[in-house]
Image 1 (tube, chains in turn yellow, blue):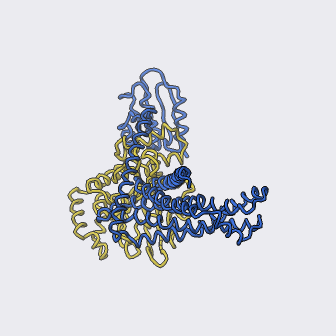
Image 2 (image 1 turned 180 degrees about the vertical axis):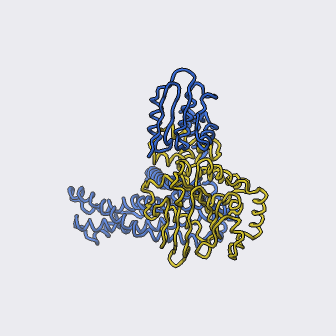
Image 3 (image 1 turned 60 degrees about the vertical axis):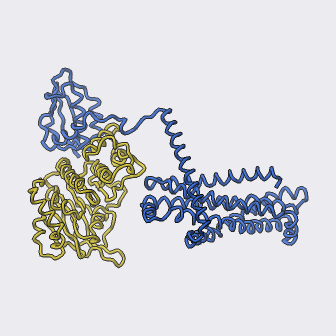
Length: 270
Length: 369
């Protein structure tokens, strides 16, 4: 679906002054950021800095201790999970482990949102599912397989197919390339980029894959010490004075990822 | 929300509105009832399409392929470039793959072959498991130090000691039930004292070993299957193997030996509690005092009944433990597989216990025991 003119002005996601505590452990002290329509927004940061927790708060799986999160202008605390609120049709989530239902085949997994939320005919559902499976570049014969018969990369693609089956406006990816080999990971980045163009998606991804950050992210927020240490394009962040951000991007891996991105000439951006 | 429409004007098909998921149901119906223009010169005007998603693109593609000239003349006019990209993507995998790719249809003969083959493979695996565990048991007997006594004692506590309250309560109640049922009949004949024979023989020989075994199959057999299965799913079993530790030795033997020790002990305990339940009813319903009951018990219930009941318990225990562990090792896939095999372990465990008990009854009857 294409946004109307009014929508472009308001951010898709607005996180303001969010704090999160689990018992004594403080995950976030004060996090504020806003995500615009049509961008690929990456949430980066070291292990345990609360990236995934922030993502889970945005989609309403975890309630922050204080602060507000607005998703399409709607307070995410009011977004009681699992009661079929219409906002659920407007975003898709790809979980780190896939979250595929192990008792259903790949095609049935992808069809679940359509069966739950629409009254489409079985034939059309089948067509849409087949189209989505083709879009994530899975072979058609994998449709009848069960999740435990798929490789890790295929499971990731299947989860992506299920996340985009409703043609959502907003796509959340939790560590999309973690544990994939570099070739598959790059292909996955390309896939996200092409789907974003094709379906007009806004993508929010949690990642610490530096190649993805340089390759496809429009803007990046670096979390650390319970707050946002830096936010902006990779070029802006690379000039940051913050020691953690510097370490993050100027370590040996950060440098090589940057050189590679420079060679590719950032041409992958829209 | 904006509607999606399709209409025919002579040889021109006009598509308008938002061709997106919420509108697709009624759009598909419109397309089905549409009167297709005759003649081959069908054109599509898609200028009025304001929004389109994958489902909408698929429906448009359906219309395009429906028209006889889906070559150059059938190309939609005025489609926005972003929708045209989507349509092109959808066209790439058109004509759609066979429905059979999703739902395989198999003949009954194929199904039967598959069933026999899988049963055969399962039987071979079960035999292999029995063999492996027997070898491991033999090795452990020769080298008792290799038995993991700490784990074994833990399982004796978990599956024996902690099961005392529930087995006690259950056999106590069963003792009461048997005595009640017997009391009514015996009172008619004035043979009140035979309540001792009834309660004593049936409980000691058959009922309490069976009740305990069934309870333990549900309590421990299922736990064994779920524990080992979860370890398999989380790759803990693979880790155990690569560390050079035998899963048989680490997981199966302590569980099996613990049950073999615990089940006879539980049976004795159940005998005592069950007979006590019978004694209470004998006193209340038939005026048989505790002293009379115990005195009669010594002469009416030969010790062989107790020994037969007790002797069956270790076999029950071995069956339950081996079935539980075996089902645990059979778990392949994910979460629902754990549930399925846990259920199978309980059902098979109870089944085998009762079959074994029946065989024992027949054999012992032949030998007049």
